[in-house]
Length: 133
Image (cartoon, rainbow, N blue to C red; front, side):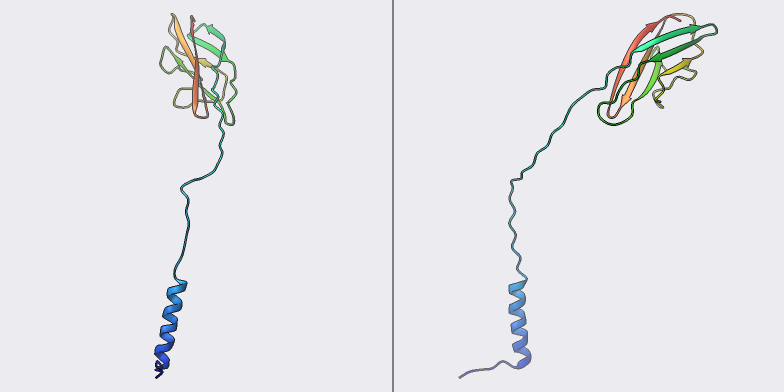
C-alpha cells in the first residue's frame, strides 16, 4: 500500500532535503605557504662638517656636506652645541631641516663641540667636531 504525503507536507520534505544538501560547504586549507621576499640593508652616512667660521660678537657659521638617503626619502639635519640646542638659524633636534649650513649665535668665548646629525628614513647618523670660536 502506497501512502502519499499531503501536498503541503511533501513540498516541505523535498525543500528540507535540498536545503540540507546545498547548505553544506567544504573547504580545504593547507598550513603551508609559498612566497619570496628580499631586503637590502644600508645605513645613513655621517655628514662632514666642512667649515666653521667664528665671528666677532659670538656667532659661528657652520656648513656640512649633504648626505644621500639610503633608498627613498629626505635627509634632514640638526645641530647641537656642547650637547644642547644652539641659537640663531641652526636647526634644533625637535625640528630638523634640509639646510646644510647655519649660523649659531650667543656663543660664549671658549672651546665648543658641534654635532651635526643627519636624520633619514628610519635612521640617524652624526658627525662630531670640536671647534674653537
